[in-house]
Length: 211
Image: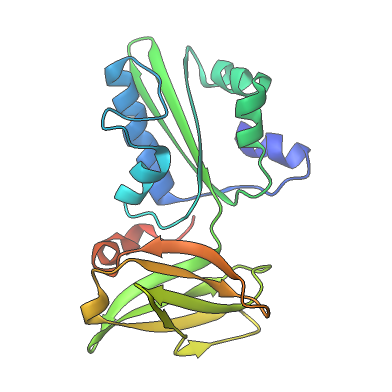
């Protein structure tokens, strides 16, 4: 794909596809096609991050490029010749991307979404009396994993320092609370990795594994 070729040519990391990003991009490409209007906000005023979160995404930052044209090659060239679009596409922090296309006759619309996933293999399941949250902090994410359950700070039930793997147990009664997962370094600085509501997220995990 031209996207990863362009990044690899500059020594940047190859991006992996994330299912929720692609689903969000496909649905928005169709919405743009139907509206015949290009905008980074949908008819309800939502941003790319808000649309992604509505699909069950947990990342905290999203980049988006949109375009319309006769071919994917023509749109890609226009993006790479535009300083603003090029900067989004070649941002070093991204780890994952998702893309979508919609077409009606000769009119074609493309959407690509980008994010940085600080946690791999994030999984949520039900145990007796609790939600079980597990995953692996990506290499380079310094510090110990912590989870804010509303205003309450939770420490992991289990943690592997060498691999970054963690397990948290969240009380069932906290399922409707806003949760923030991240890491604390030695000086107590918190780095946010992802956000979610356990009740809403539980049904999203078949799409969670990065491809």
